[in-house]
Image 1 (cartoon, rainbow, N blue to C red):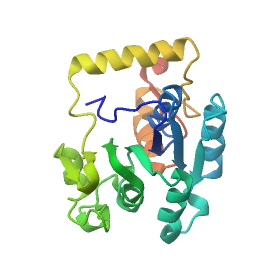
Image 2: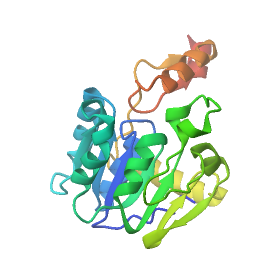
Image 3: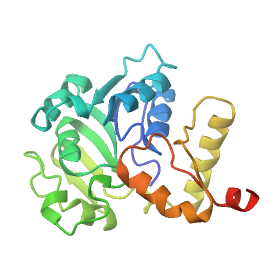
Image 4: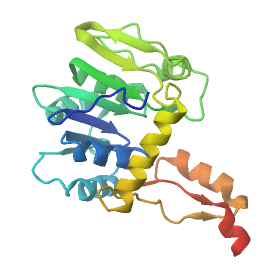
Length: 232
């Protein structure tokens, strides 16, 4: 459910796709709760965005990992260095594949991973092996697709827990409460909601909006303004 991560003040929280539609909000929400954030992004532009957003909490020691500057084989070490010796307490993970595996390796004893998608495999190719996040410490994880859609909860050694689908397990009332809290925080400026630019106006641009979302280039929330087309 939406409280599966159980973020507490003093936690180290790793957010992947941290400049994405939900990731940039999750990173700020964790920081506002008193956590130290390790934000993982895929470009210098995205690193600049999340660095700016997290600058509101300058004393927390947040870290940003730009995957575009790190060789895939070096990613686990880069994440471990950013997380620090105690590891990651909570991971908000929506990429899947090798990145999810690398984050899993940094998860501390008692840590929680909340899976919110596996965008590295969208649209799904059908190749389960390519979307599996198996790691040395968790060799029997199911493919990302099955983990997510099966809404699995996996208990791993060291008291670590992987929640396969944070969205599907949430009841409507919990979602409504969370939405109300987030919108209130945005309204008073505690959290900044970033809209990817340019916005897509008119229903005829729906395919363009989806393409933008899947491109990996978007920053913030991709928005399709259906009514705007009618007003235009």
